[in-house]
Image (cartoon, rainbow, N blue to C red; front, side, top):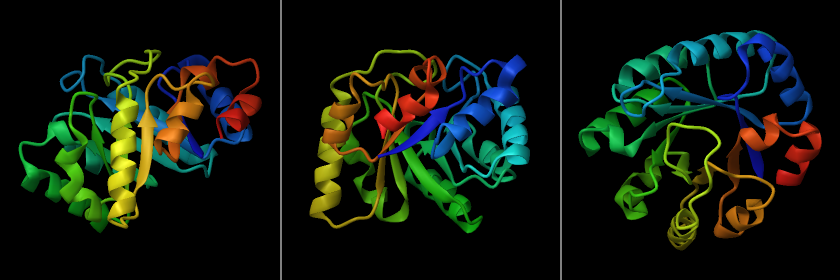
Amino acid sequence: MEVATSVLNVEKENCIKTFYNIETAGTDYFHIDVMDGKFVENNTVTQMIEYCEYLNSITRVPLDVHLMVEDAMSYIKSFLIFEPRNITVHYEAAKNKEELQEWIKYIKDNNCKVGISIKPETKVEEIYDLLPYIHTVLIMTVEPGKGGQKLIESTLDKIKELKKYIDDNDIEVDIEADGGINLDNIEKVREAGSNIVVAGTCIIKSENMKETIEKLK
């Protein structure tokens, strides 16, 4: 299991120190939650650009960029500058499959891995035809847009369904789960078939980040 630590709730005043602590605690990725205030309520664009600038100058830990935005292409261009490991776009943000394919191609043409994210109410079979073209499926286990929510149990069934389809069709795709993941439910998330988890609150607020990340892994 790989762990991507969400920096959404990192306080700006101590962010450099916190980033250093997260890195030394052994995170695999820094998860960057980019919200435009349209696709979801909150707007984190300025904060996340600032955090990416800091992270690029102080760490070699890869960035895992999650775009919760309407006008995905302009944000893809903005965040490619930081040379992230991957950029994930939302299936629901595209007007149609053609637009999604354009985003996927553009990200890959710029030497970056690509992910597709789906909200809790979107059926996983909607994206089956896209799996051969992408590297990651990000299953939202809460409604996107806010940190600190409780994991929606029914989303675990989607992970199981996706994992079965991937295995049956011999496709190589990571399954990343994001939202409300903590030490109490990580086992269920892993058993469902996820191999990357995004955790924010449970790591940032823990007494011992290293121990928490080790337990999650």
